[in-house]
Image 1 (cartoon, rainbow, N blue to C red):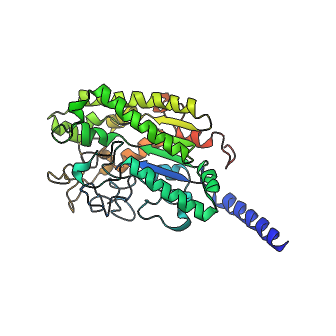
Image 2: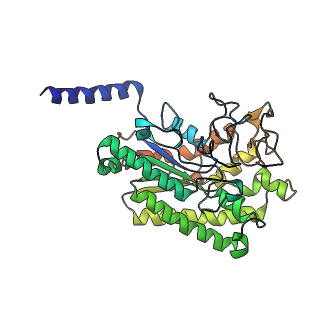
Image 3: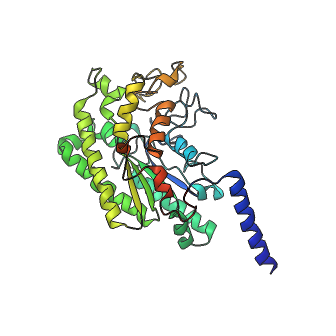
Length: 360
């Protein structure tokens, strides 16, 4: 009887605390992807794709943490929109029961393809990130009692995946290093990527994911790196056309996944149109001083960045500033235009058929 009373009191206390403090919109939030989402997984890897040195993190409370920007990245801003009172820890640093609220597996220079970004050194490609997630699931099962309870817990979480940019920047668009552009046309390559990505997403589903937001690719042809390579001040049309082939196929994949897995909901975030809109309002040149040696295109270690960072879209030759990340995340969470997301935005995704929280 005493044990029963204790359990009831614990449940009541939990409900009171959440009512007073305000619970997040989902009990857990998991992140897969590349440097746009990485928050430290690459710090101790043998790779040039690291950002754990100044001037990265100049506007982040903890300084340089491995985020490829001056402050918060998309994963951080989304945690805020979801009402988490902390940022989701990297897989490299997550310990104990904090994994119950989510883990960030993202890795700079990672891609859908295993070989993408290999010229930069070690990276945690998407297939390996999924392997790391299985380690987390095993740990959650230990914490909750068994794998069934772990999968039930994961059914309630939000999963975001933002990957594919490096399969172009650090693969297809580097014909002197990688064979992909010699073997495939842009159409064939986009099809190949989506086929592999589809299998990886089905694996994520089989591991318990039921609310999955897939971030499409931005206008890669407009990033400073591409402008420099093509010696132009205008967006590189051929690159953007190749990227759009991937995005079109990804949107179609969302329909296919939603048809085949009726107990799950996949959505597409249109980063292409969102990034285009941001570029209209912010300066396109990078904020920090750019290295011409490895890591080429990233910030020179220790050099001061521009003073008015809120006016710049890019922090280095590849990655947005905090303000760019903030605007993009706001539109991914709550669509400003119907084209921003499909078939719904993240705000509606987390509230759809929510078994953990009442609809708001």
